[in-house]
Amino acid sequence: MVTTGEDARMAWWREPTRDQWLAWVAGWLGWTLDAFDFTIFLLLLVPITREFEVPLTAAALIVSLTLWTVGRSALDREAALCLLRPSDPSRRLWSPLNYPPYAS
Image 1 (cartoon, rainbow, N blue to C red):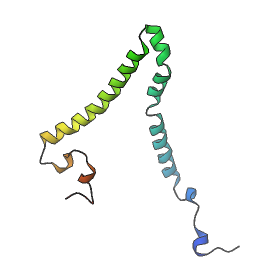
Image 2 (image 1 turned 90 degrees about the vertical axis):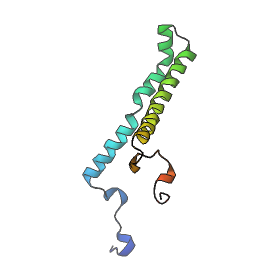
Image 3 (image 1 turned 180 degrees about the horizontal axis):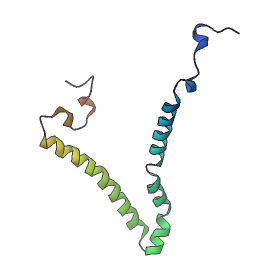
Image 4 (image 1 turned 180 degrees about the vertical axis):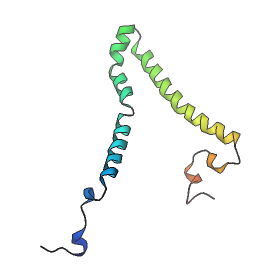
Protein backbone atom coordinates (compact mmCIF):
# COMPACT_ATOMS: atom_id res chain seq x y z
CA MET A 1 0.00 0.00 0.00
CA VAL A 2 1.41 3.39 -0.95
CA THR A 3 0.95 6.20 1.54
CA THR A 4 1.17 9.86 0.68
CA GLY A 5 0.49 13.19 2.35
CA GLU A 6 -0.96 12.99 5.82
CA ASP A 7 -1.07 9.19 5.78
CA ALA A 8 2.76 9.08 5.80
CA ARG A 9 3.06 10.77 9.22
CA MET A 10 5.44 9.12 11.65
CA ALA A 11 4.00 7.62 14.83
CA TRP A 12 4.44 9.94 17.81
CA TRP A 13 6.62 7.50 19.75
CA ARG A 14 9.08 7.19 16.87
CA GLU A 15 9.76 10.91 16.53
CA PRO A 16 12.08 11.37 19.57
CA THR A 17 15.61 9.98 19.35
CA ARG A 18 16.96 7.41 21.79
CA ASP A 19 18.76 10.15 23.76
CA GLN A 20 15.56 12.18 23.96
CA TRP A 21 13.67 9.17 25.31
CA LEU A 22 16.39 8.55 27.90
CA ALA A 23 16.26 12.19 28.98
CA TRP A 24 12.48 11.98 29.28
CA VAL A 25 12.69 8.78 31.35
CA ALA A 26 15.35 10.35 33.61
CA GLY A 27 13.18 13.44 34.12
CA TRP A 28 10.09 11.35 34.81
CA LEU A 29 11.94 9.17 37.33
CA GLY A 30 13.38 12.24 39.06
CA TRP A 31 9.95 13.83 39.31
CA THR A 32 8.35 10.57 40.48
CA LEU A 33 10.96 9.75 43.09
CA ASP A 34 11.39 13.33 44.29
CA ALA A 35 8.93 12.97 47.14
CA PHE A 36 9.28 9.21 47.57
CA ASP A 37 11.14 9.54 50.87
CA PHE A 38 8.44 11.80 52.23
CA THR A 39 5.74 9.37 51.10
CA ILE A 40 7.48 6.52 52.92
CA PHE A 41 7.70 8.71 56.00
CA LEU A 42 3.96 9.38 55.85
CA LEU A 43 3.26 5.67 55.53
CA LEU A 44 5.44 5.00 58.58
CA LEU A 45 4.18 7.91 60.65
CA VAL A 46 1.88 5.82 62.84
CA PRO A 47 4.54 3.18 63.71
CA ILE A 48 7.04 5.98 64.39
CA THR A 49 4.64 7.75 66.77
CA ARG A 50 4.02 4.46 68.60
CA GLU A 51 7.73 3.75 68.91
CA PHE A 52 8.55 7.18 70.34
CA GLU A 53 5.25 7.49 72.26
CA VAL A 54 4.34 10.78 70.60
CA PRO A 55 0.71 11.72 69.80
CA LEU A 56 -0.12 11.37 66.12
CA THR A 57 -1.48 14.92 65.97
CA ALA A 58 1.82 16.32 67.28
CA ALA A 59 3.80 14.35 64.69
CA ALA A 60 1.45 15.47 61.92
CA LEU A 61 1.83 19.08 63.06
CA ILE A 62 5.62 18.77 62.97
CA VAL A 63 5.48 17.35 59.44
CA SER A 64 3.15 20.14 58.32
CA LEU A 65 5.35 22.83 59.85
CA THR A 66 8.41 21.31 58.19
CA LEU A 67 6.79 21.40 54.77
CA TRP A 68 5.52 24.93 55.31
CA THR A 69 8.97 26.10 56.43
CA VAL A 70 10.67 24.64 53.36
CA GLY A 71 8.23 26.33 51.00
CA ARG A 72 8.33 29.57 52.95
CA SER A 73 12.14 29.68 52.95
CA ALA A 74 12.18 29.52 49.15
CA LEU A 75 9.75 32.45 48.96
CA ASP A 76 11.74 34.40 51.55
CA ARG A 77 14.94 33.86 49.58
CA GLU A 78 13.40 35.25 46.42
CA ALA A 79 11.96 38.22 48.32
CA ALA A 80 15.36 38.96 49.87
CA LEU A 81 17.04 38.86 46.48
CA CYS A 82 14.44 41.29 45.13
CA LEU A 83 15.17 43.71 47.98
CA LEU A 84 18.94 43.38 47.66
CA ARG A 85 19.01 43.89 43.90
CA PRO A 86 15.94 45.97 43.00
CA SER A 87 17.44 47.10 39.69
CA ASP A 88 17.93 43.53 38.42
CA PRO A 89 14.78 42.72 36.39
CA SER A 90 15.43 38.98 36.65
CA ARG A 91 14.96 39.22 40.43
CA ARG A 92 11.36 40.42 40.49
CA LEU A 93 8.94 38.46 42.63
CA TRP A 94 7.18 35.82 40.61
CA SER A 95 3.91 36.86 39.11
CA PRO A 96 2.17 35.85 35.91
CA LEU A 97 2.20 39.55 35.05
CA ASN A 98 6.03 39.58 35.04
CA TYR A 99 6.26 37.35 32.00
CA PRO A 100 5.38 37.89 28.33
CA PRO A 101 2.95 38.83 26.92
CA TYR A 102 2.05 40.79 30.07
CA ALA A 103 5.52 42.09 31.00
CA SER A 104 6.06 45.72 30.22
